[in-house]
Length: 477
Image (tube, rainbow, N blue to C red; front, side):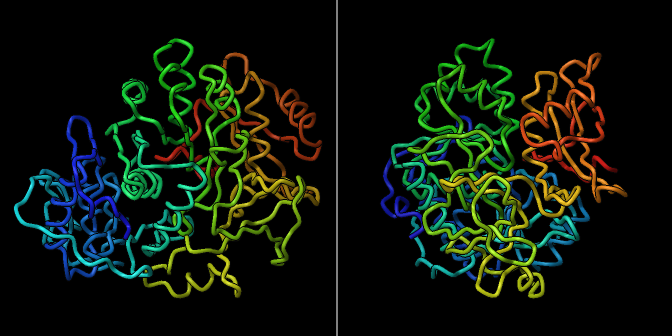
């Protein structure tokens, strides 16, 4: 079963959103009743606001064996229309008061309600390879593709994290992540429910909310780098926040790299290290720093239980470990998706002949197995002067410079080098930005001379998406 604790029921807390909460018995009742209404649907889009109704709706769809399609409530109409055409839903699930955009209004609507029903029963559990979720990936080279995630992928990832993070039914998770991504929905809601623990969702992230919940018994915090950066900025003037974080069992960051400076500021103020993990929509989680392992800034730890991971060069040959062996990450295991919906061509292209998924992420691997992501193959692998250089490692070093508030690195064509390294810098003091010479010398002293930036652009802020990832195409635009 995906959620054994639902079958047991009882009064243990399962979900809390603000002042509203459901025990396992109550969640089983409301989700079980809604699941009965959904039975027979081919799939169901879920208007995924950060609310109790979204969590109940997704759990109900999973109980019914109906694949849920979580939708970003801020999605544009063109992208939404594409998703509706692609997955061809016959119903839609939303909270009673949610106003849906035009591409969804003509569909029969089920309201996700938390009103307790009368008689109910949990449906029969579907097979492990039965589709559980269809999560649309952001389209970098075209419209979004629907990654079909089976039930066994959810179970494999969440059970591997149980092992890596020593996650138990006693843990209480707090977060304010959106519920249309893998991070907030699968890890942040379904994860606690699979363990038999509980989740407290902030609705909207705030450092005050983190302080309140960690001071009131929460043991784990999930966030993205933007959230941890705000925490690091707040810590010097907020002893209550520092005390709350110091009492947490586990602080986890994901979806993008957390800067080394924020790692250090949080560790210094609280005595707690933030651990990072690495995953993506198609693979769920691949690696993590273990709860009983050594947290290292700029690393995403070691492969999770059941995940086979290798680095390959451009010809597909596996690379040995080492700081200069930059290769594409390929993974294989029960955590992988089934297919891209209606895209057999894209599905076939995504996998190697021996069943590894081509992630498109570039990394190096330390001798002890720790993985360091250096960027995306399409945007972060820079070929300069005969060297293959990962933008991520240069960004990490630039962020260590005291005059740099934020940094991104890209490549651009160069007649001599092939590509030259370009740094995009948000200075700490806009009136006294660090010079190109200063930054180049700093990078060359920490890495190697061929990795120094040749051009620097100064910005007031870097363009980032909802999950804190830098949108590098927008930099050049």
